[in-house]
Image (cartoon, rainbow, N blue to C red; front, top):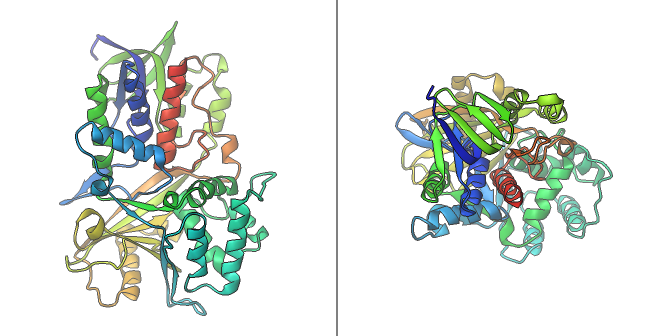
Length: 453
């Protein structure tokens, strides 16, 4: 270990989207910051990986138009490097959903389609359901009735409850719950509908579907996650005088008088403020080492209550002539939930990614068996497609925290019970589920509170 102690105003532990956002906000205010991360690259759980000859994301992340802070920071760091055009890096589409249903299920129509209606909110959503195919008049009316209640703030939750129970209480039909709400719940919250928090889901609906027409737009990245934000963010932070150290795992934190010391395998760092921008499990381990006089016991107790959900991404490489009808295709009654066409998005011809959110029987399958299952399902919908030329699976076992009932009650604030010790991450008290926007907002809020002090 180098005996030299590196000193800084703020030390950020963790180079995911929350840590990077906090760093950007702080260097903009001329704070002396240092960010460390144990990995070889920045981005945390939203980053690029190389598998064989392909560079892909560790999971297909999309955004919506309501993710204003993430869009603002992407623009900020990219503008600093020169001209920025959203169209160059992001494909924006009006909200339209299409689900192909498994033919193995009886008494179901083969396809449900919600078209994009170019009207101001909420008339775009109303029109989408009015002109939807595959839903009965009763289905449409029950969704529209609920939408009007949400828009007019006529729904109050005396206590949080499971989203499935909420929809049953709101007289949503079984078809609507299974075909519309459950897929959206998994896509937004990565949590089973019988566990998911109605409180969080309704907050996201209000922010995205009812604020403006473009708030509900679907935003697809035309490049890798690392290239869209972590890489330019690193460059921006360093240009502003910040320091970033990779492959530097924080081993311990100790408090000495008015500053903290952080030990890594090769050095020791000293800072007045510490921002722990890691997942809850890692944060808890670091906090346990500095829990003087049990000041952090309530926080540690809450962090231990978090559970986690998996996301599996199956990449299939078909011949380059294969292309999907849509950028994003949904499936019902299958293991596969969403398919993304990488040719139209990232210019990777013939490559598709299949997303399977949360738990299920698929987690018991090894990678070859999961690939076989997904390939056979796609063959049912696209019988003209040949067999894939190659395939691989990426499993993020702790992709997100479980956005379960009453989880907001234990989500921590950025400020801890110890002076100048802070938390940042999508799991903190942002009211959002585990999304890029939730992580970015947490990092920004944390930095703003530090600056206020």
